[in-house]
Every structure is written in C-alpha cells, then in structure tokens.
Image (tube, rainbow, N blue to C red; front, side, top):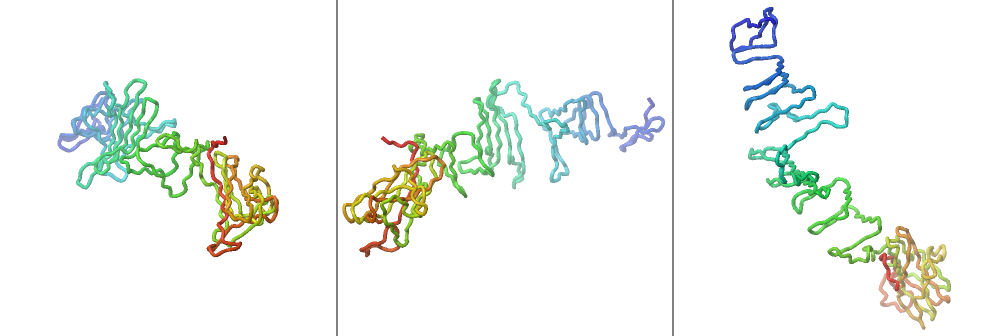
Length: 418
C-alpha cells in the first residue's frame, strides 16, 4: 500500500489526499472536516455531528443528539432490516424546501407477487392491558392563533388481550368546535362481531352517495325516525309480510299491515251530466267505464265495493255481480257466488245501493273487474249516476245523482269465515 500525503499544509480549507504517485484518493481533509466520496464501515459509526453523502455500513450507525444524517439513499443488503432507534426521542422527516407534494413518505415494492408495501407498528409491551392505546396518528395544522392543532387523528386500542379472544378498537377522530370527536369507531367483540359507530351528536348528518345494503334485521334509534325522500319511497318485502308494532307488539292483522290499503278506486260521473242504465233480465256489464283495476296484495284477498243509485219501477229482485270483461265484449262471470241479490222493492222506490264482494287471487297478479247488474224481468230497475248541479229543485228523473264509485281494498292474510 502506498503512503498517503497532503501536497500543502493543513488549514481550514479541504485539500485532497494523494498517494506517492500523485493519484487522488477518496479523502479530502481540513483542520475540522474529513470528506469521503464513499465510506464503507465494517464496524460501528458514532457521530457527534452531521453525516452527508453515501455511506455503506455493515454494522451500526449511532448519531449524537441533534445530529443530522443527510443522504440520498439508505439501503440494506442481504434482506436485512433497517432499524432507527430514537432512544426516547422522535424520528422526523422534514423538507426545508417543501412543494405541493413534498415532503412525502413512500413505501415502494417492486415485487410482482400479490402483496405490495407494508407498514407495521408494534406495541411490544411485556404487560399488555385492556385500554392500552397501541397506535396514534395525528395530522397537525395551524390555527389563526399560530397554534399547532390536531385536526384529524386515528387511534387503536386494546379491548381484550386474552389469547384466542383478542379484540381491538379503531377510532378515527375529527376536531369539531375545538374538541376532538369520534368520527368512526369500530370495535371487535368476543361474539365474533364488529360494531361500528359513525358521527358525533344526535343531529349530525351521515351522507351515503350510493345504496345502503343492510344484512341485519333491525334499524333502531333512541328517538323518532323520519324518512324524507326527494323521490319515491318503496317498501318491498319479498316474503309478503308487512308488520306494524307498538313497543314490540304487533297490532296490525298478522303480517298484514297493508290491510285496508286502497288498491284501486274508480269514480264516474263526478260533476258530469247524469247517466242511466235500464236493467234487463240478463246479467250484463253496465258500462265500459264502471270498473276497478288493481293488483292482488300479498294476502291474495281483496274486498270489492260498488255504490250506485237505484230507481225501482216495480217489485222484482235486483242482482249485482262482477264480470271479467267489459260491456262492449259482454258479460263473463267472475263466478256465480259473486252474483248476489242486493235489493227488492214492493213499489216504486229510490235508494243508493252499496254492494261488497270478497274475492281471492294470486299475490302480484293484475285484475280488472266490471260492475254488472241483472233482474228476473226487464224494465223494473233503472241505475243512475252523475250530476253537475244541485238536485234540490228536481222532482222527476233524471235528477242529479252521486257518482258511481267502485273500490278494491286489501284484506289481511287471515280472514275469519266462521
């Protein structure tokens, strides 16, 4: 090995160190500084000042308090780990010339396998305990009083430390009105469940941009609950059960809270010129418009009601019924049991008759029924509906009548029939 020397006397300026042939080495020297192009150390390095440039270290690097280690790259070899031990202090990444996206911390993995970069924290406690906080991450910024404020933070807490039944809690916190409040809290339970709380304050707002999919069976609230939709509200029970309860007790007909819902409603002759129909000695639909359309409810059971004014010319039984086709097509009976005697006069009389039928069908099927009438003789009954003025001064037919009304009402699944 050739001896090294300086060409000039040592002073405050860095001077290159050469060998006896004048070849420059990787060292420069002054009275207070040693500059090394690349430094590889097999043992340990302990610094009382700053280290700059590239350093290859096979042992440990120890920095004095408030020292800086300024390098372009830190790299380990042979799958070794990089340990930074602050010994009770802090490890800080700073940038004296920050930009919009720096300083930044990036964990990059070039492996083509399924996993990318990972960040792991470890609260390596010899005596872990319930309510230990094992992770803190706080995002600080300044307020208008030049104070550092933690605007958002996340924490992890131990809820159960027992082997095999460990449970943890994750808390995401946001500052509200100067105080940190829980934004989201997720907690594991020994029942193999994870419970989540969202928001702070009874009047806080949670907005969901898309759909809400709930796999459980209950939505509960300590106060009142309101559904305020800017569009339609749809209730869709796939098993057809709709239940209304009071403090846990069902008061609606069993699984039939829809019972009483009007499924279809027809009104003909409202503020219109009176119309009439002369009942014949055959069952016929009265008019193409005197009908009701509906869809069978989950129970498949419906009450049909029809109301119309009747004028008798002589005593004979009057029958009302239901047809599945209109007056133009002709009468198609829904069934003989739906053709019933509804009125019989012993002289010339007038009355509004209301008839009701109980019918069944398949839930979800559409139905359309026409009001029909018949008598044992012709020219014994006239049916009237409609009016557009007061009937007080009328003394002969046609007068002013109530409109014809026909209604379909949903019935409960359970019907008492004796």
